[in-house]
Image 1 (cartoon, one colour):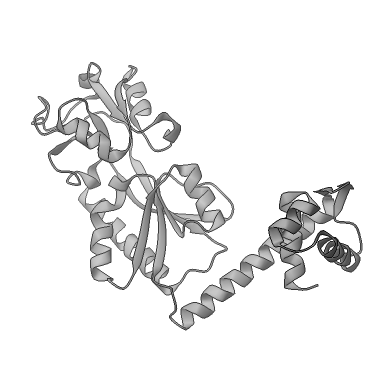
Image 2 (cartoon, one colour):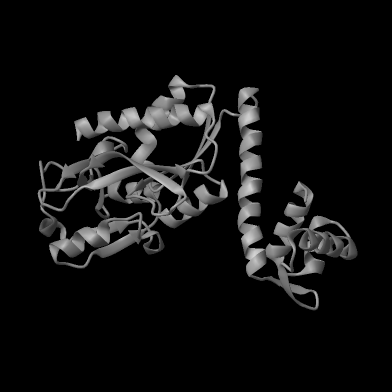
Length: 293
């Protein structure tokens, strides 16, 4: 058995069709069939149930696919580790965040301190971040709440308090604190419902005994524009109270609990020195933020 056989086997298992797999791999169909047959001979049994050109993994095949995925991932990690030792292309980090407002404030500081590191920071829902960590699209995930998956490590960074966000010219902007009942007649700006794990509006309003009256659902930047114009209010976290211009963050007086901010990564993936630097930095910043809020 060699690496090429495993790679070809993985493609056939995913495509469930010999001809389609051959086209994808740019090899002839007879050649690919021979590769699969040779692999089955080495493994001591058939790996697929066949119906013409269509093939479906049987129980033996599923066992091999599981170990093949692990083996191929280990090889990818080995390549990264070797590249890390040779200092080639290890300064690039991909971070998925459940809100830009969670991290904008101090990721800027990190990049100033480490100007040799490049950072791709993308907004995504919890399930997208989890899938991205498992697939390698993301190196880290930053979320409100733990990501629950056996292959993902999630560590708490800090506990945060919820606040009400209003434009600087809003009648409530000068309030020192506010109860949720005070906003039941206000128009609400929120993240889209299909990102429900990201947004907290529904849960907070439900605790206060009323349904939110949504005037706008959109991304964080669009919401802040509407709030600046006095067209609605929203919710945020105390740690980023100064994140946006002309937006006031008012502490909520209700006993509604706290938000836990987590950093997550795939435990099976190799972390480069740059990734470890960011990980250590975020842990320290988490301690500072928790002390402030």
